[in-house]
Every structure is written in C-alpha cells, then in structure tokens.
Length: 398
Image (cartoon, rainbow, N blue to C red):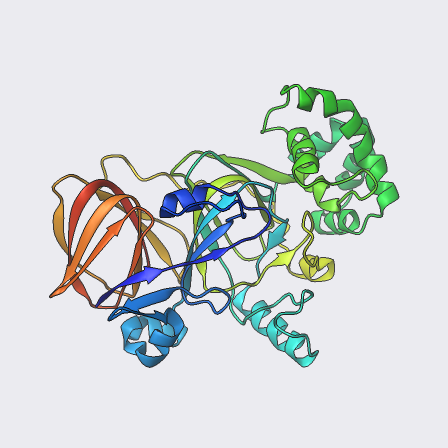
C-alpha cells in the first residue's frame, strides 16, 4: 500500500527561516525552521493519511507491523529503523557525536535508573538506539568531521603564537588526553589561546579576507553567528584547529559513524539516520554539554574524510553507499515521459525534491509534488509516472 506522508517541523534556533518552507510550499512566518522529520520517532512523528484521516506513523506500524516486512522486523523489531530529515543550517550546530548501540542501551538504562526524565534538559540518552547517519548536501555545505592527522593538527596550532605551546604539548601526548585537557579548559586558558587570534584576525574577517577552509574563518564566523562573548569563550572553538573542515558540493555526502565528532557549520542537506535522538554534545551550544560522556565514547582516530560521490546526471537510479545496516538512500531521477513499475523490498519513504510524480497502487493514486512524501509498505508493487521533471529520494533498508 502507498500512503501520503506528512512530516513534522523542528524549530531549533540554529535553523534558517525560508529554505524548508519554500521546499514544502509553505509560507514562512519568520520562525526558524531547522529540520523536517519524516519518520516514526516519538519526538516528532510523521503522519499518514488514511481515508481522509491523519494517523501517526508509529501508531500505524504498531497496528500493522507486517508493513515493515519480515527482514526488517527480525533485525530491528516492529519499529521503522530509520529517520529521514531535511536540515537548514543557518548557524553552526553543536560539536557532537553519537553512541554505538551498546553504549546507547547502557546509557539509556543508566539515566533511567538515575531518575532523569526523558524531557529533562540534562538527559543525554533519549532512547536505546545508536545513530549512525549520512547526509547529502543540497547546497554548498560546510562541516567538521573527525580529527585531522596529528601532524596536521600540530601544523594548524603552530601557525599561531598563542597556540604554539599546545602544538608542542601534542607532540608528546596522545590525541584523547590532549582533547580532554582542551575540553576542560577554564576561561583564563581559553582567553590566552583564542583572544590573540580573534584580535589579530577580526579586521580581515570583517573585510572578507578569510576563506572558509581556514580555521580562523570559522572561529570568527562562529563568534558572530552565535553571539559568543569574549568573557564566555567555548572550548568547542578550538575544534576548528583539531577537526577536518570539509566542504561538500551539492549532491555530495558523508557518513558519520559512531563516536566520530562532527558539527554542521552552514548549508542545507538531506539527512538519513538510524531512528534515534541520542546526541552527546561537546560545545558550541546552549544545550546540555556532557563532557565526561563525550570523552568516554569519542573516537579520536585520525581521519581522512571519505566523500560520498554525487548521483551522476545520467543515472536514473543511484544508490548512495554507506556501511549502515539500518538505512539506505536512493536517488531517483524523474525524467520526462518516465513510467515504470516498482516493488518495495522494505518499507520506504519517498520524498520528492523537485518536480512531481503520480504513484498508483491498484485503485489508490497519490500525486506528489516538490516537498511532498509517501510511505510505501513492504512488498508494495506500484506504478510511478513523472508529471514534472526533477528527482526524488527514497529511504529504505540496504
């Protein structure tokens, strides 16, 4: 069966105001629209339309678990294993990472035993699931992703007189211990490290002379975007000198494995992840920062970012490849005059990113234009006809 699916908006402060409303064909009301969720997570569940009535996707799956298929149910139980999102990153997100499945289960049980309510601002583990995730850029997109090589970090720190002692310290220290000291630094140490750089580079930043591939650019940009004052510096600001600064072009992507520290800095993207809201934060956010848990599970491996290639222009169907078992993302070109029959091997969510399609399953017909989506149950055999050229993405199991 195929059903129209309606997502849920998340109004986080870092979000832009216009991109997601324009994609969805909605009128912006000036409120930040940071994320559009399409899934069954209880924090913001999507809804199906059934006989003219709306029903939460999670409730539908509780009543109709066979819609997920035997393979999905054996591996992930009677819940949709993934969550599809659209993000509009107008201001930098927090330095963060996500736990493994075992760490999430242990953390969830531990915080339950401590009596920390699920809606408590100091709750770290919101569910029992891990949260590997992939993203595909919808614009030029900038992010932090994992630690640079130790040699590259030393070079980056050595470029500034105020950070040269840190560079020398790292020569004889492992990355985990080094990162831990920085994350525990007090305001006096942060000021000694950062204020000389801020004072020296502020005029160049204001004049547009710094480039986004430079750590100094993001230091000054983040101070301005997040209104961080000189007397309340954040240790996360040092991460611009420690982590890989990654630039993605539209259509390219990256995969975030458990434990890899990262932060989205600017741009719009599609995000697909295991169905979880477990985020361990390490700075650059007004939300709860759990440094001890961050340092317990962080992966300090030296990483060379692996960029996921964009879908080729000539490809009608293109699968983005990741190691994830919980989800997969497919790019479907909508070409003029295209018709075809498709069979869903697992429960799927189709989101039309541009153009328009008609889906037909027997007598059931759904029309989807840009920004609209459908939920397709396992083993559904449906016809797809392109109404207007563009493309869609399909979230499913690998």
